[in-house]
View 1 (cartoon, rainbow, N blue to C red):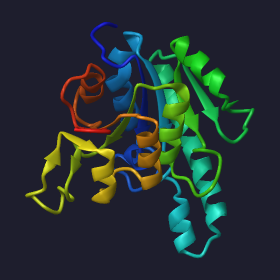
View 2 (cartoon, rainbow, N blue to C red):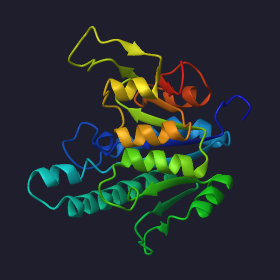
View 3 (tube, rainbow, N blue to C red):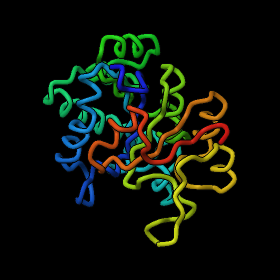
View 4 (cartoon, rainbow, N blue to C red):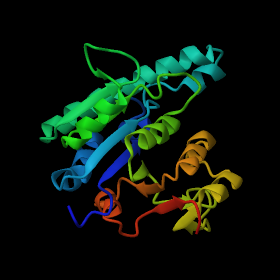
Length: 240
């Protein structure tokens, strides 16, 4: 495992990413691509944790905008992340990975309850550990859940796998002249209000000196290259 810079990493995936070309739900090919991306690192002994959103099924904020109680909508969104976590677990196990789902909301029939020491023990035993149900509390995004879990388990990096190859000063889809950052500070990201992670998640990483790495998960080998410390995507750090 000497070729890998990071020995323990948390990967944050968006629920929308699981849709693939569909308008809703889970495209089975997407979890397969994710498994193939992380397989070399898993086989090399890198300890990998995953947090996934639920936006492909339900988003609490959107429910609140339509008149639903925000807390109720957020709980529904947490349940959506559990569905996605189970789908990932099934796919990972079919690829030969040892995998556990730990939920912040107790669901003994389908997952283990999240306990920090248990999660760390799973990682030490070489099991991919998927954290489901966000933080278990409403009003917090899965970005914040990813930042919280990364700090709790002592991850060396929080990797946000998106459909964009890094952080830009403006939307690269709308603006061809958008400038990409190779490195950016937490403070600058907050001041520029770059919509990469929410402010709570960014501040939590800043307070705990947790580097954030934003990359395109659809680029072949991007996750493994990032774990090796190669120049991939954009890194968010305390100082330039």
